Amino acid sequence: MSRVTQFKPICFINFKIKQPQEFLRKHGFVYTVRCKRKYKGLCRIQFNGEEVAIGIVEEIGNLQQIDLEEYAKYSGFNSADEWWDVIKKIYGRVKKRLYLYRVKVIEWWT
Image 1 (tube, helix red, strand yellow):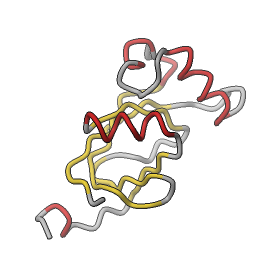
Image 2 (image 1 turned 30 degrees about the horizontal axis):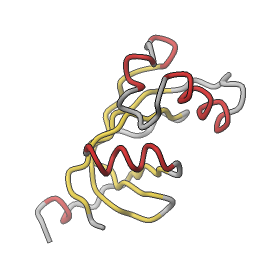
Image 3 (image 1 turned 60 degrees about the vertical axis):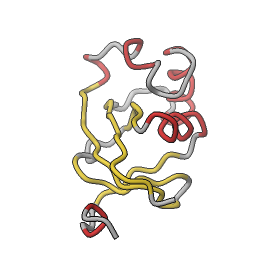
Image 4 (image 1 turned 90 degrees about the horizontal axis):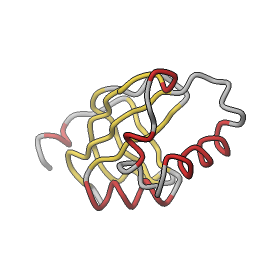
C-alpha cells in the first residue's frame, strides 16, 4: 500500500462515459463538466461505479465564464460541439449551473 492510498478521501468522481475514461487512462488527467460544486481535492476516481484510482480534483470555474473550446481537446471528445451534445444529453437543457473540473490521477488501483 502506498502512502497515498493510506488516506481515505471522502469524495468520489464517477465517469460513466467511455471517451473521458479512455483519455484519463491514456494521459493521467481529463477535464470534465459537472452540475454540482462539491468535487475538490483528494478524491476516489470511479469508472461506472468501480473505484479505479485516487486523484486530485480541481475546480476550474463556472461554465458561463469559460470557453469550453479551450478544454475540449483534453476532455476525450473530438470537439467542443461533441462535448456539448453529451453535456446536454446528461443535464438536459443546460439550465443548471455547470462547472468545469480537472481530474488528475495520482495512483491507479486497477
